Length: 120
Image (cartoon, rainbow, N blue to C red; front, side, top):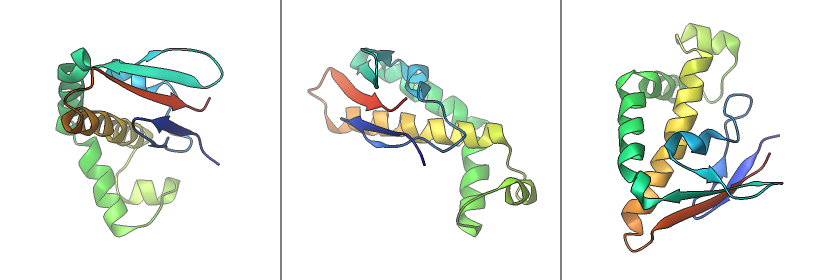
């Protein structure tokens, strides 16, 4: 079971790793209750790029990608064998969310805000 987000971008939060409020890291703010409705202003674009670069530079993304190239899925044993921590998984999951935001803004140059809903 997992929680999804949808709207201008969509996907699934990484199970037992990624919080529904992961979007706030990239400048999203909650719009209403029930589902978390987020809006990310284009003004946050530079912050999105900065946070993505910061995550990438610490090696979390590459470690998890390397693990997933070798195995389909993960558990504590697999993570240990590949030197992947829960922090690595969390950063990898957030990186993927932030990358979706960046790509959306890149592809929708005339839009000022990106909207998405996240299941609680």
